[in-house]
Length: 63
Ligand code: SF4
Image 1 (tube, rainbow, N blue to C red):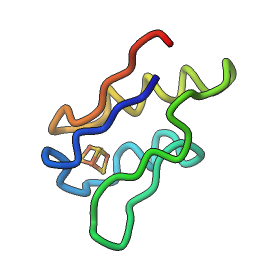
Image 2: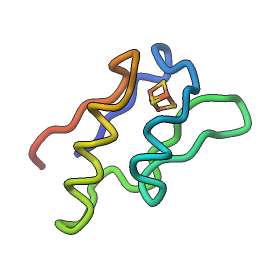
Image 3: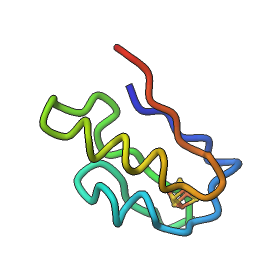
């Protein structure tokens, strides 16, 4: 399960670059999680996105 802290997000877009199928930047310049429960073949990309976020706004837990 991916969770995003939009209060912490500063719209760097690193998560979108790491996993474009899972994240987007919305019109209000906050991260939007497109798929909070990524399929198995997207889990590695989700982990890369969590690590890539410079303000640690993303977290990934088992669901
Ligand atoms: S990498 Fe972090 S700060 Fe940048 S858009 Fe994604 S969640 Fe927001």
